[in-house]
Image (cartoon, rainbow, N blue to C red; front, side, top):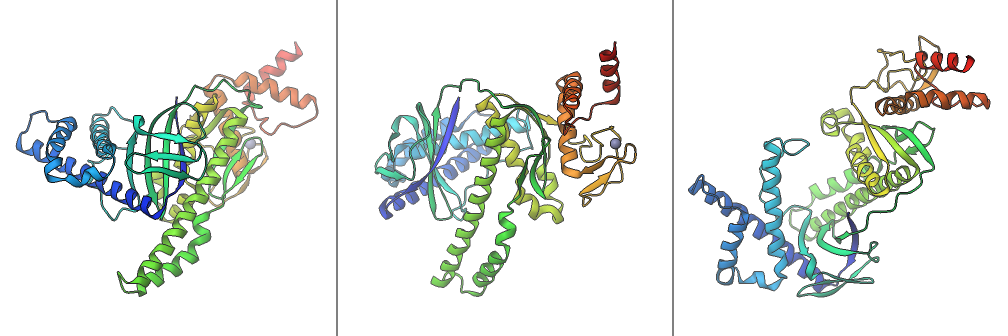
Length: 409
Ligand SMILES: [Zn+2]
C-alpha cells in the first residue's frame, strides 16, 4: 500500500531559487513534449510515436539545445515526461470508457502563471533523514516535520502553493493490521449547515473558512484592482491575497482531515450519499457554500482512509430520498423544501430534525444494501427493552411485526 505524506519545506532563498528553476524546467519539458507529440501525430498520422519516443528525441537534443536542464536534477525532466505520459493515458482511458469519473479533456499546456508549480523526483535519488530531505544537485532541505511513514520511498513531488513549498513523499508501507472499531454502522448526512451529521447524533460543524474571509478578500481584491499592474505595491497586494487564499485552503483541509479520520476510525461501516458536487456547484446560489463544504473531498478522503483503517464505505444512490423519507415509518414527504430544517411526518407524527433524519435513513439504507435489515430490528428491540429509545430505531414496519411475532411464539 502506498501512502503519501505532504510536509512543508523551509528552504533557504538559494534553495527556493533552485525549486523555481526546477519547476520551470519541468513545465518547459512537459510543454515541449506535448507540442512534439502533437506535431508528430499530425505529421505522421497512424504512426506510433509515444511519450517514450518523444523523451528519446528530447534527450538527444538537450545537450545542444537546452543545456540549462543540466542545472537541475535529471529526474525533473524524467518526471515531466512521466506526468505527460500519465495525462495522455488518462485522457484516452477516460474517452474509451476505461476510466471512471467525468470525461477528461485533452492535456493542456502548463502555464507559468499557474499558482501551483511543481516538479517530480524519482525514488532512487531521494534521501530522507530526520527533518531533512535531499534533493539531487541541491543538497539537504529542511522539512517542518519528520516523515510519518516507514518504508521504501517511491517518489516525491515538490510543489508551491501561495508562497509556500511542500514536498509530498510517497512511501510503500505494510498494510495496517485490521483494527477494532468502537462502533459497527453509521449513516452520515453531508450538508452545508453542518458539514456532517451522523445517525448516532454526532455532528461536525461547517467552519466555512471561505465565507469567513469573504470581506477580507473583497477588500484585498479592491486594493489590488486599484494598484498599477506590475508595480511594487501591486505585487504586495497580490501576495497578501495569496496568503489569505492559502490560509482558507489549509483551514478547510485541516478540518476535513480531522473529521474524516475520526469517523473512519470509529465506525466499521460508513454510509454516505454519493453526491455529485460538480453538478451541484452549477447552482450559483449554493456554489460558495458548497466549495466551503468540499463534498467531493470528504468522499475522497473517507474512501481512502477506509482503505487504510479497514472497514467499508457504502455509497447510497444520490436519488435515494434521504431527506424526504421518514426514518420511523418510511413515509416519503414530497413537499419538504431545502430550507426546512425540521418537519413532522404526516403519517406517524414523528418530529424530525432534517439532517439527523437523513443520517438515520442512510444508515437504514446501507443496512438494507448489505442485507442486514433483520439485525436492525433485533438491536431496536433490545434497546427498547432497556428503556432507551434508540436513535435509529426505525425499521420497516413488516420487519418489526415479524420480529415481534417471532418473540411472542
Ligand atoms: Zn413517519
